[in-house]
Length: 251
Ligand SMILES: [Zn+2]
Image 1: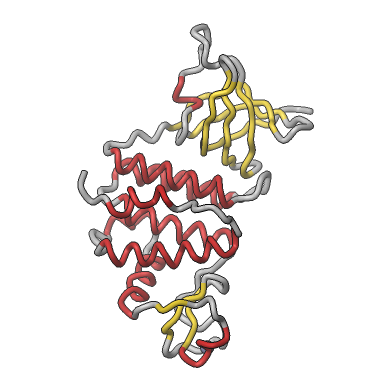
Image 2: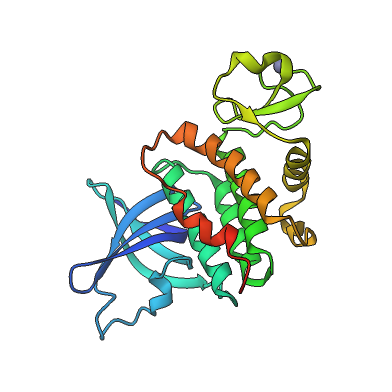
């Protein structure tokens, strides 16, 4: 099969055998793909390590094979998204992990590729990685088609008394419909307002939001997580590493 020239961001990397690596990529051309890149960890390799490191944007040739593992060759580094702070780097890696966890294999989604590129760039300069991270997650949920509706009741369409949030239905639920979806949990008007503001702010201007109290941001993140969690049906705890992003405010 002819190779495909691919632009991709490396979501995850696993060292394999003596000199190879297995890479999980999110590519513009094919969505998420898993592939092997051979011989790059030997001293004789001319491929720079950043061209096969997590978080880098690369350009490479991809050969589809019968196995789910494609073959990658001749990777070039396009962008390495150098982070100034360890917290930004940690948040970027957690964001990449979410994409790896929640996207299906080989389903092209150009919007998500663009979102990842923008997110990587923003992480290199923003001083508020925790706000960017939660905003990224809301955008990811939207692209995956799981929500989020914040202005109407997802059951009756009413605009008043939006007191609950349903992860299952992906949005707010009104007082009258409270009994119709038992998975719904309460959302306070204050948290709802900030979630709306975060959702409405153009992603590239997210740096304008200087501060969201940590407790509120964790709640917004929680509503996002119950939405993702419902759709993913994962039984294991997948949000553990988010704590370092959301709760450690010292750099
Ligand atoms: Zn309702």
